[in-house]
Length: 336
Image (cartoon, rainbow, N blue to C red):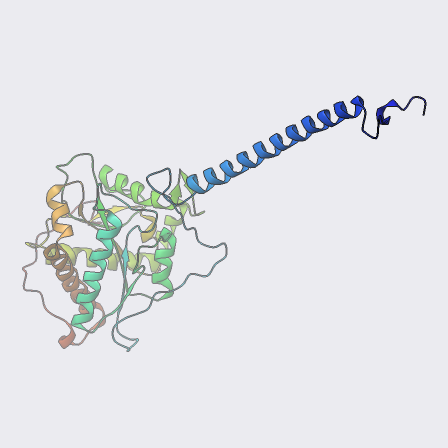
């Protein structure tokens, strides 16, 4: 047929134009296969890289997980241990920090572990003595917002709230325990610094996790807050007295600062900085069974004297102190 020489047969075989067409088709097919193979290899490499670099701990020294409270979630309350009699006083013990927030400390000794161990030691001591009910804001390594800790005490209708912490300083010579109560301003530069450091537990990269502002401290003018503050100060004085000879206090007077965790309108609240983890002596004491036992014994005695005065606990449930009252410095920090 004229003009159709591509498929002209010679002796029953395809002509030369047909061979050229087949060679071109083979080249295209090989190019297509090369592209598909390259894409498949790239895909496999991307999957392998994703599995390696996205695996927990792979490609880095640690994986940081931050658990945030569920929006609108209801706060779960911890169990209350001790006597079934609801008329017995209730102490809520708060182990500072936890979860993604390690608190102070360097190396293996972290504040969140130290505070939990001290809280457990105090709980066990109180339960062994009887007559007092106890609840821990956290019994595991979990994160709680600062307002949540005080909210637990309020919702449980606690008679006393003790938040346990340990400090750290760039000065390795800084040492000793300190008792803090709530104030709208710090009693000293050190008190203000520590309050600011503890309050930062509710931030991540400087972003606040709560909408609470320092204006909440205005509630101090309320009569309920005034009564709670007076009871908190009375209890703090008892700890200083009972701790004479057993605990080394950095300050022999009560300190005050605007700690968010202490901002509860109707629960006497005290923050107990048990010592400095940056100080070798304090760190060794707080990490030792003997140090934890001394902390628990002193605080237990102060709690029982406090409630004996205010709530008339039966004498069998109250152990009188054998330690003579220690002098307490007076001044602006104590409210005298």
